[in-house]
Amino acid sequence: MKSKFLLLVALFSMFFSCQKQTESQPSAHDSIAKMDSLLNEAAHNAKKSLDYIGTYKGVLPCADCEGLETVLCINENDTYKLQTRYLGKGDKVFEQKGTFTWDAKGVKIILSDIENAPNQYFVGENKVTQLDMSGKIITGKLALQYVLTKQETTAEADPTEQSNTPKVNLNNRMEAQTVIKNVNPAHGKATLAETKWRLMTLNGKIVKQSGSKDYFIKLNSKDGRFTAYAGCNNISGSYMMPTAFGLSFSKAAMTRMACPDMEVEVRFAKMLEQTDRYTLNDNILKFQKGKTTVLATFEPIN
Image (cartoon, rainbow, N blue to C red; front, top):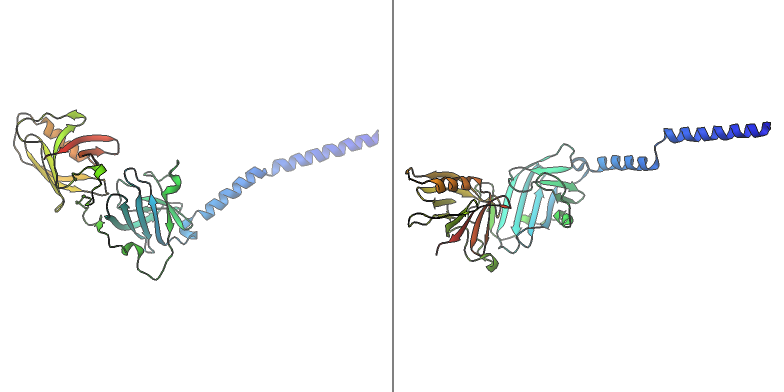
């Protein structure tokens, strides 16, 4: 009987000892998760641990072209050079230079002076990943296509300078010449600039013209200026293209005639202020705010 009692005491002691040890130590799952977190925190501080200086290249997804050929040069003095070319829409290369900063965690670089386009990149080992407009990782089926790969350095010239294709400097004056000389027939024969465009709809409503003069807008690629008319005064000003399909108007001025009905003209002027991009398909020009809101539509005047 005594021996059975001692055996029970020993078993209870072993049980409580194991339970105490289990409570004082984290589970294997918790340990692995904590270790992964520490490793990620150390490994993902790209600013300190990675050799990120260099040239990165790739073809990013494009909504209305075959792909966006992109070359990003990250320099030691916190400057960058970004070149993009819209595949299938001519040989023109859009180029922008500026400075970049790091986010607080040292994992993302943020390119300065880029508006209405992604400007943040997650920096990894020998690659950078373009993030969305809010600085978050892009998910979905095309997620892996937003990666630019680091190029091997050689004694040759900067790879972004080796091409003889025409370049558009987006720093000094936003390029006004939007004409792709080798026009894709699928996008019509009229071009944004040098074509006189008749106003068809404004804010989703068909425009009824009064008088014999067409309501129109015309962009001049040589000086980056535009002229327009919407029922009363002559309108003129400047336009800019921050990206291949980005479009904005500024410094608009008009004559000071007073007319009985200036409603269309007032709405037309407000539309120009809101425009930030355009599309041109089958000879129909659309001024838009964002990718989905159509502000006005035009047709070419023969």
